[in-house]
Image (tube, rainbow, N blue to C red):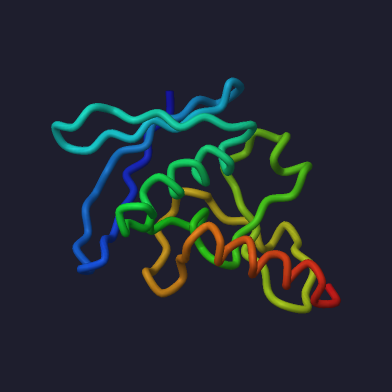
Length: 132
């Protein structure tokens, strides 16, 4: 089992550090541990979809995850998804993603770089059709 410390930020800009636990292979899941609260488990077809499920749950409480996987400009390809790597592409409008754009999904991202799942999906759709 792997472990990463990740920061969360709420509407009042208060930051809390949590721990994510996740496997190296299928079945994919992320377990989030916060202080004395019970561990919450989020499952999906890859580690990115697990993070997405976790983010949707937290967004209902005005909480964002401060990691690369929550960046508005982050995405995964089908091949990357199947590889089991904990990486995402950081994309640029009008430019095709390459291996140079790969970053660790759980590395810290600045609050202004992250968004909601919907904002991320909208950005990625625009990026896909941006002439890359």
